[in-house]
Length: 396
Image (cartoon, rainbow, N blue to C red; front, side):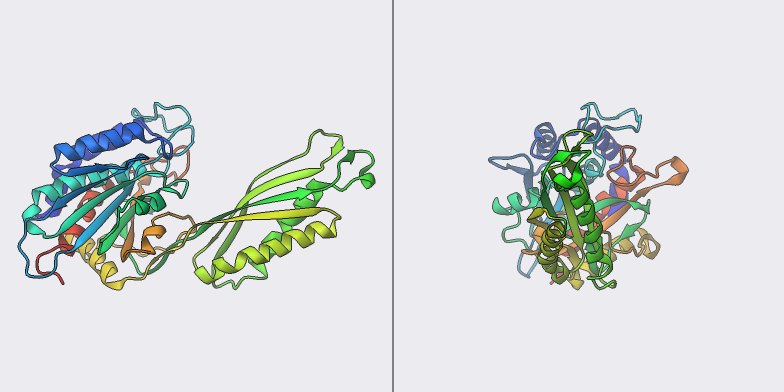
């Protein structure tokens, strides 16, 4: 049976599941109803479901019925399930019913696609051999879920893991799978600036923490423009700032929170010390003090396992021809799928979601974000085709 035809047959189911999930989004570690719905669908499809003991999310397993003379392999297919704290403004008929929570990054689509793939792979169970493991991961948006899933043995003994992301910068129905860096690291830092408060009319009697913080913000960008090799992308962003008490008081303290993103691990590991030096010395120049707290989170995603990259590219072309593939520059957003890459050979793909002809143009994390639902069957088919190809009885 051809996978693309089976995926086409699943189209009504894929849309129904995606819309149900979209209407009932849940935040990281709170995906209770989402997990229950996934477990129900998988059990009805004939998969063995394994819930995590302490948190949301689950794995499901199925053994292939194909006969092989080679060593049986284990493949993990992964989808993330959590939503974002965003007030939805799409006005879709299936708009979020949970105020202030929205599937603004396509995880509803990821979940629906992997559920559709589960039904397809059950239908072609005699075409593959070995163990197939589906991982429905919680808490991706806060960079904690992958680490927890690994601690629970979700990828233990796996020979490979395949992940995918709906992407707003890529038109539907295109697919991107290519070697090299694909997504950036994501680290977080907090800066505390301590000055001396004073009357706004007598600033010389204090040390202005807001002016100091402004200088720090400006100087931090020279780490990108003058300290970093321009051939190696680096982004440093201050996303939150809070300081001051009243319009006529020189601020005595300021708190800032930001993120560092890069595609290269050696660049990533050199930033903390440079940032700390810039922060403390700039503050000292203004007569203030400043401290930096730095937290390492997701590593860069790098498709460095060429056999898996070529297998995924071959699966896409087998399904939809060579024109289905589109090259795409790496993106500076991050994904905790990178945590699996440290432990298991992996490959990561992007699936096009936008369609200007349908008015679908908003990018990921936007309050108007939605997807061209024709992409759902392509995503389900790619999951399934990659699995059949990797676990084919004749594959080495």
